[in-house]
Length: 399
Image (tube, rainbow, N blue to C red; front, side, top):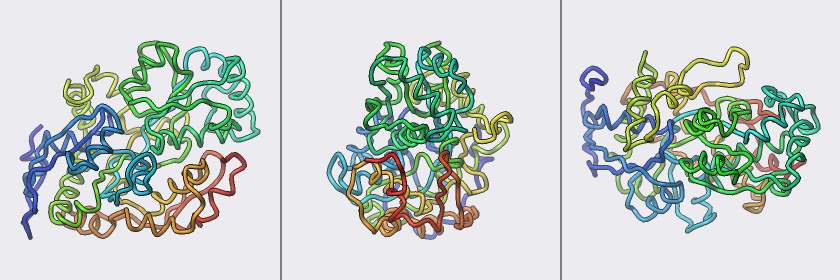
């Protein structure tokens, strides 16, 4: 890696109020933008020095953001919104600075359950299922073979993996709150729990699904892009008071990480970052397992199985408020919050769109169009024009 050839140093309009920033991350492949930003020292051109701090769990990320031990972090989109509402901890005003990646998570079942699903004709067809459909019937029949309530793991109660898992199960006619026992486990502990027969399935980011398959303890049956194509996943987030106290440093941080995301789209750079992510201080597993699901090509056999995206000309990174509002609708759907009518206003306060636009302009990154609509696995659509107030109450399966 040669940072001298990766970035053109801009003229610093105003120096950052804080020049040394501590950034938290969890051992996942989608921490790649922060790792690249540090290893290539993109921050130096913007007046910053970055210190990466690996955390054992998303709860630790939350706690250290709130205590001020971390200035910002690679974190679950839904975690930020949960903290904003005081779910599972102290309520604190939060800020989503940018989206770090889209897609790139998966649902893996134990071998026993995957075999039962395959026998019922649903192997490889989970993206086509819906409540009451053939794939849904096959999943329900496979779960019934266990003779008990299945145990599925996600990584944090309000996090993205919980929301993808619940949505996928419900789209197949399985009630994730009544038919399944859901437990939260940190990503690096997922494979051991599956190998120890403590789980029947899990939803987590890579490379842990790939590792489960490589170790022969589970099989991936669905990708989260099948649930919501091009869904937002991890975000760069901090407390709102950090943005207020350090606006220039925060903007410089977004510029820095945008440079890293752009670099990741360069030829051969994903293979390169996989080797760095494999180091003991980052993910600490075989680089081949990381690289196996870090490619940038769409699955030709299933076009809804989309690769992890980090930049795509800037289309990945804009923090669309409507995407944040979706998580609030799901919190309502699953009984985490009472119904309310201000989801769009909450999202507009959390997602720092103006700061992002300023940072993007300084590093010549285009801001994508905002009139976006996506069709989810169950046929529901969500986009910039969606009415969030009534959305959660449209679902047949909900709390």
